[in-house]
Length: 543
Image (tube, rainbow, N blue to C red; front, side):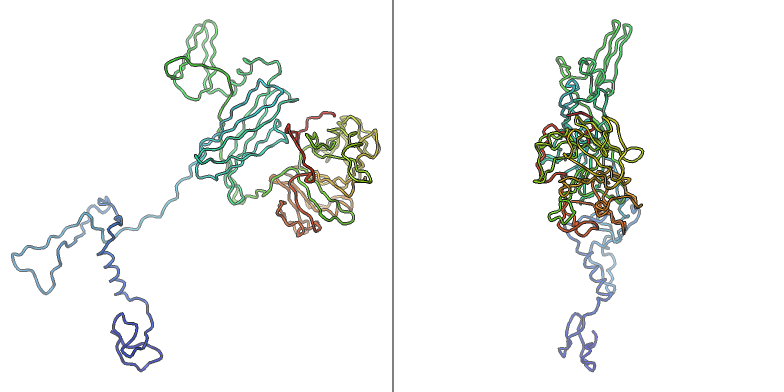
């Protein structure tokens, strides 16, 4: 018991019983922290009445404490003042099997399990090298991927066989737990026979950033048109076999067992080759209906701070909804190693930069536009900077002079590029800026208010050095391409901002109001590419 502790009644002498919140004079008492007696009482009560459904803290047989004997009284404990009479049975002292020990050692800190790499692979099928010069379809199935990864993975392929040089698909997990296969189409038409690499990247995204990445590379064979089926399969097995059996000089070669083997069996000079793949009773039909193989996916380590672009693209456009004097309505962006300039086509265009003739009445996709070749000129990187090459039927004028077909000429600041040489004024461009990572072209014909072009090198970082540029190009923002997408560079502060449809462009330097980012280079048109004809296909042909 204690006296009243109400601060408003310091002279109160009433006693307060334990547990009461008021004294005998009805003065409220302040709540205090529980005493050590209260804590011990609560702990003993918890030990004496364990939960019937609770699991024991330690196993019944503990090798660490197997020699320790902890007594527990099974009967009522005798009072200290009333000793048991002589001859009376003494209470038994033993350790009950189900009783919990009085002291449980603290569990060691949890050690995170060691990282186990995922043994995933791509199963590639459907490839038929006999269709030389025709359309091909690859079926890719993702197998062995961990269930802990994201339910949707991004697949990126890069190869000279694939349109635009690269393609992107998504692996989606089904309700059964497996992955929906992906089909990739390409054409080997006008491709030199031989082997072509296809580089594969599989990304797992978490909150918009790449959390895991797997890579692999495989080879596709484009045979000669006159190659026989036997030659094609021999070449395929020479690169994909994992078992090879040869029997020479009347010897006997035998293979038994095995699953998923690609065999190359040869028997010459009266040799006998026997193959037994532990099949059930009956004959085995071995044919070449399709060629299929597995490619192991290797997981690569990612840097701690990943700067993945939120909207990867190789071609885009900046659209100005309300252009002022001297501004273009569309600023078209291209990030290609080789950029093809050609005729505007709505269906299966052959070029990357699609050019049309502009008259005083506006754009005319017919008429004089038809005097442009589908593949008219190529702009690419050179040792001196950038160069342009005429690959057209109708010719090209550089500062009023035809350079000759298939003769590259270095670009110069202020150079006048006129398409074509036979009829003047169809399309006239001017080189208004040359950077280390790209060039800017402005139209100086009736389409000057309609569009201008950024031709950038992919994955090229700009330098902050002073570049020579015309006034109309110097007023434009500094853009570059990295991590698969377009970026804006603030020259004054050095801040880099990824360009995406959700980016507020009016807050960036060099952008006027009413600008937006479009993920297509020609958002005002619906370009149809039925045969996959697309960007970055640098095979030079004439219209």
